[in-house]
Image 1 (cartoon, rainbow, N blue to C red):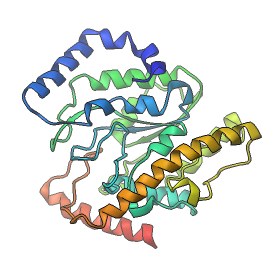
Image 2 (tube, rainbow, N blue to C red; image 1 turned 90 degrees about the vertical axis):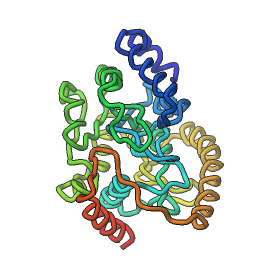
Image 3 (spheres, one colour; image 1 turned 180 degrees about the vertical axis):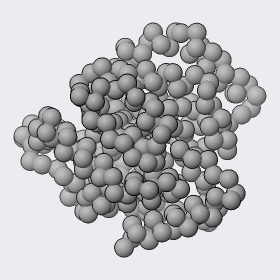
Length: 304
């Protein structure tokens, strides 16, 4: 956990409830259960987005429960895993807000650039048992992550992107006069068509940030390799800021080069059966066909 978060959450790590949660996780390990994300990634959200850098909060529910998916950031997956259905729908909504937005090469789903720019990607539960959606719900994570939300809500104004009823409950006590709370249905293929695509949240978040803090406070939502893209809604900034960003871009460029290499490897991997989305919805067999058709339509819209 990043020091900035540890300093404000340290007392919560010593509570009876949290110690019970730790015992539960140890028992899962002792029983030979596979738990996602990997242990070293459970708190990666805190390392990518320190407390003082939080501008936008996107709330998820449950980590992805398949291999090489969850890595501690809500909705994000590491390459060579391609963007799951909910994330693809986020790309569609983002492109409606910013037509110049282009999904990552190979339609991958690594969202670390957003986190590094101040978007906290936080799940309600921070772990899950392999292949069992919501298997760690009600074990104590929700109370801990609610404290994370409360810490943010007690600081300067930020934007909360709240998708779905469970996420809405998490921000029920957030001061709307201090923060901008944007509500919509979840981007899951089973609900996105009921208003998510046209919610305009990515643009509205930036408009509020600029109005509150001035030019340069907005989020650059681009996920393309730095050396190949003109930034989305990137404004002119002071020379000192540009110099600092140049150093950051050089570092991120190395990561993007690796990402592209991994993407080329994807073309040599046999396509596997579609994994069901574990964020917000748990699909049964009767619903899967509807989800697949919705996803195909979403992909077609994104490519058009």
